[in-house]
Image 1 (cartoon, rainbow, N blue to C red):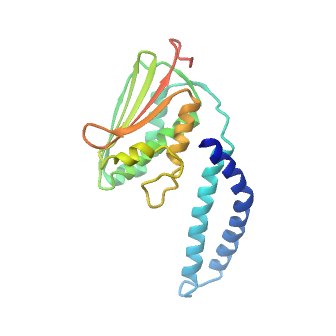
Image 2 (image 1 turned 60 degrees about the horizontal axis):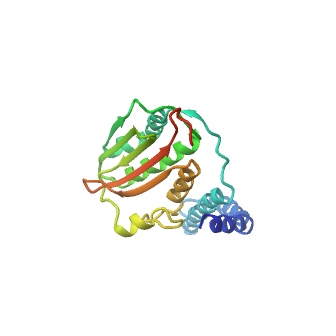
Image 3 (image 1 turned 120 degrees about the vertical axis):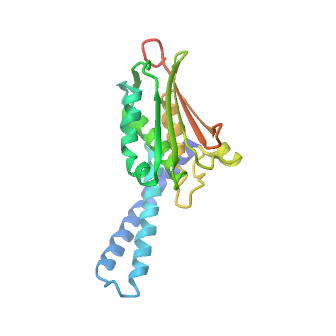
Length: 223
């Protein structure tokens, strides 16, 4: 599936992306020349918004067409978690979401691509926040056991339906009105490139629960 999506994205980049840029440019120009009370302005705004949505979709597809080469370095997984949680404060604080950290100090340094792992964590954290628009609890736990670093991300939202849990990592599957269905598929690919596993389900309290497992040797290096 990933290979097929990559081939599709390469074709889309050439055939669709450049025309989209032209459409976006002209619509923005026309909107700038139109006063706020002009009845045509709403149409120009709609064109700009929908073009931007298409550009975003094509841009995300390009991640599959040209996956970034992993640049692995020794990293503190707990530090990456904390750094990424800071990035979602604009989501957690206004919504009244409590963040609970349970991070295992015994985690060794792991050889990972810092940016890619933070991308996966950010995607999971943002998804959790979006599942709790009226507030809730975002729990993040790390555990080191039997040569595995395990990170769990759990929310107190409505949880995943059986269909969602089964298809969540498939490209283009989404439960969001504005979603592209590529964020979790890309996260799956990143974790897989690291030799790890990412799984989705529901926690004991009914909210969504995501688990990432990264395997390492005794020295913190990937086998």
